[in-house]
Length: 115
Image 1 (tube, one colour):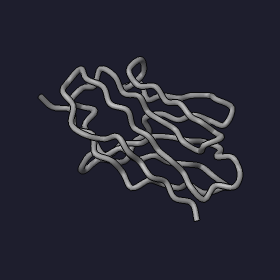
Image 2: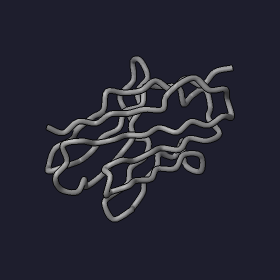
Image 3: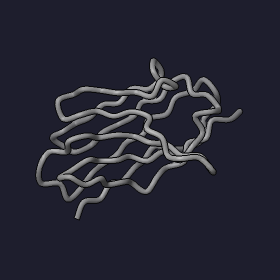
């Protein structure tokens, strides 16, 4: 059974940094795409960043230049380094794995950017 566990959320002041991590278990073959999404109350979940098995990265325009996604394919882990955080980055962040024709989600971790 595939499970994703996130860590690293919390409260940070504007301009600060946080690092989110996601660890997948129950993986037998390589994960095709690893990603991060976020959601605020009343809004749809949106893609923040993703990275493919061959290292191609995509970012939402709102986070380009501030967030960096990376992965360790051998360990089935990936991280989201978030710098220069803004209050509008406040959300619940979810990691997602596209694996064997299915999408798997983590439980979510709260990121709050506030002074």
